[in-house]
Amino acid sequence: MLDTGPLGRLVHPHANQAIASWLKAAASRGAIVLSPEIADYELRRELLLNGFTRSLERLDDFEQTLGYVRLTTKTMRRAAELWADARQAGRPTADEKALDADVILAAQAEATGSAVVTDNPGHLARYVPTVDWRSA
Image (cartoon, rainbow, N blue to C red; front, side):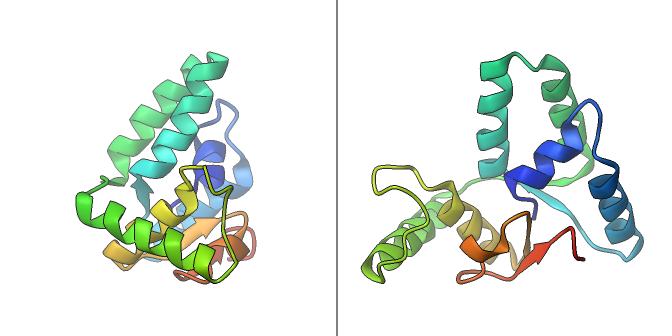
């Protein structure tokens, strides 16, 4: 399951060759790469804000080729549990007033039994398996 950073690199008009190579290698090993709705939201809002229409088109096209994981009530309820747990442990992943997309992503990964492919595994590793695509 892709975090927002790797997804953004894949849909950039000048796609990052390193992440493209990683994706090709993962597919050749039989990995199923998923695009979570929360990462789409995080990336899409920035692309819209900045008027990056070509990247938006690539995002739409790219997600047609991947498995797209929609948000569900069950996932959002689990994300709320993770959010509360992180704060009770004194280890929040975002400002207390923030939506905290990281716990939503973790809940989506947990629900599908997926690892999260990310640039920053530390913030998600306490919840779900993570893969730093640069070292995989």
